Length: 120
Image (tube, rainbow, N blue to C red; front, side):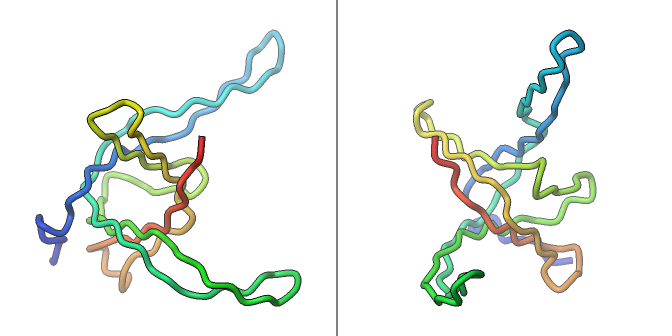
């Protein structure tokens, strides 16, 4: 089994999972995010092209990809999982939504997570 080399996985990321609850009195839904673990990742930018769904326009794109070791104790969800990079300063927190999860070669060694930075 091959894993990411420690020097390449240089960014610690906090894994967060979404939970929702419904207030029984008001029926209002509340969404919260909780820390459920951490993972070391190699984050890289990849360029490419995308075709607009509606007018077939092709535009240049840049995607952030986090490469992490496969974890059998965790199931990644595009809808209910996100990652945070936390700096020393509290204002340096960067949150990423996961757009896509790919099991590289379907070998359960590495996962590639396509990320979208959340702007506050």
